[in-house]
Length: 77
Image (cartoon, rainbow, N blue to C red; front, side, top):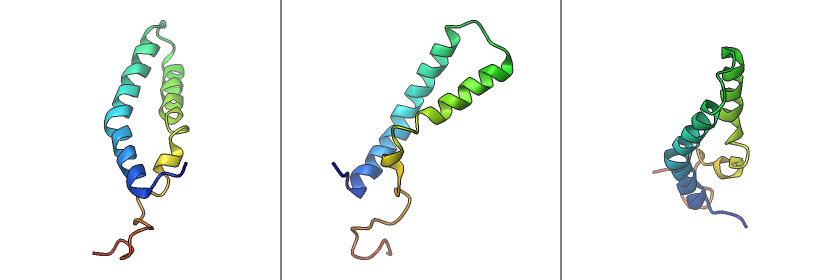
C-alpha cells in the first residue's frame, strides 16, 4: 500500500515527536539493566541503537522534505 505525501508527512512528524522520545527512553532503560560496560562499548551501543530505529521507517521519511508531487503548483506559493 502506497502512502500519500500528506500521510507520510504527518506520520513522520508523529514518529519524531512521540515515537522517537519513547524509543530513547526504552533504549536507555534496556542498556541500564546491564552492568555498565566500558565507555566506548556503551557509545557504540547507543550509536547502533540511534541508527536502528530508522531502518523500518525509512520509507516514511523518503521525500518528505521535498515539495508535494501531487500539488498542482509544485510547492510554490
